[in-house]
Length: 240
Image (cartoon, rainbow, N blue to C red; front, side, top):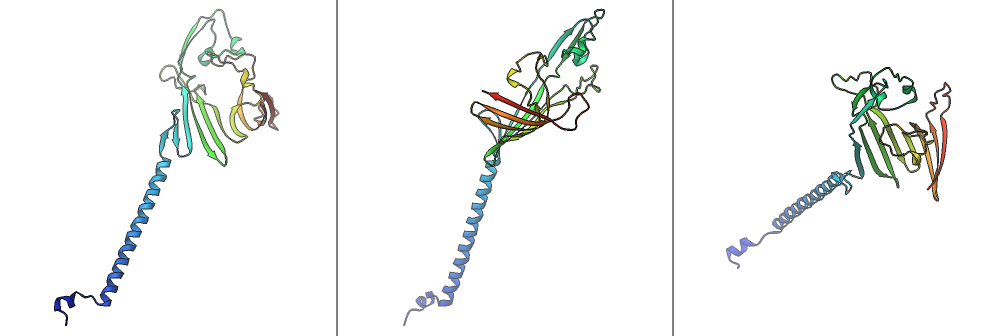
């Protein structure tokens, strides 16, 4: 015959089964907590990948997209004599404005920051290539509402707005008919002489080859005439 205390310490099968059930329930809760922890860690890692960081060049990295912000601020002072020009005409010399010169008229000073410009570009890996976008404005837009008495608030003007992927480009930029290699660096804004100078909307395809490239484009058909029934068809061959 066993002592009473020892007999009471022995658990019956039903108690053991209940204890096992409780342990299984606790283990299930632990597994669930671990699963939630892993999910939270993955969400944190994903959020970290999408966080905004800086590249070595100073651009912004947002996920896989690189965001570049550029431009410059430029103040300009001009002195025009013989009554030449008014507002931006005294900053940009054109044949039509030269025809209005009058030797009987005096000189005119002009101060402006209209040449200042702002641009934004992106680069994003996409389907084995890079999707690029670029938008740039300056402040040589409409001047009807501008005044030099209060704000000198000249309107923004679209210079470039295009996207490119692989060999394709769509949007507004330099015409395919231009020789950009022959567009020299000059300090005087818009003073390039004897060059084709135009930016316009287009759809362009570029085919590289050894030592150069071929470009084909459909461009906005504005040529100063009335015939705009078909787009301008441009092609360009360049050799490096």
